[in-house]
Image 1 (cartoon, rainbow, N blue to C red):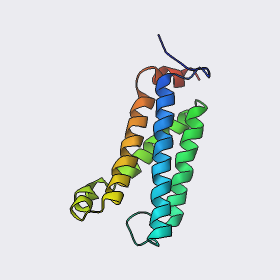
Image 2: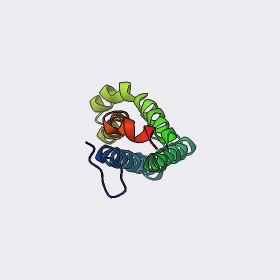
Image 3: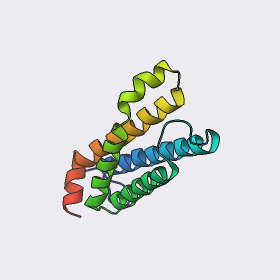
Image 4: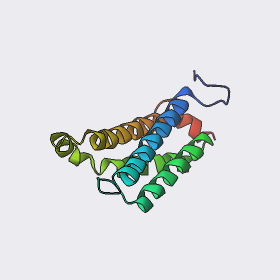
Length: 130
């Protein structure tokens, strides 16, 4: 038995959408802080790559909400790309760059949870019949 909301989406999909939205907010705040406060001197992508990343994340959210499998693929791509800087976490903590470490770890965690939710449980079936 599947539990769903008014739109007929399983609660797992809604939770994944919230996680993807939280990751988008974390990414947007980090990009803004890096380029408006630190003038791009801190870690992170340049403004062009950062904005492109936000567009891809927004597309993933919109497509997943519309039951489109491409949205799931974009969520996976986004999670994989956000995993690339994870090896820097130890150095960031050692250097007391807690904001940067929190951004990298938080964005990846939200995206990883979202991908897990999108590919497990009733989510698999929901996308198959859509």
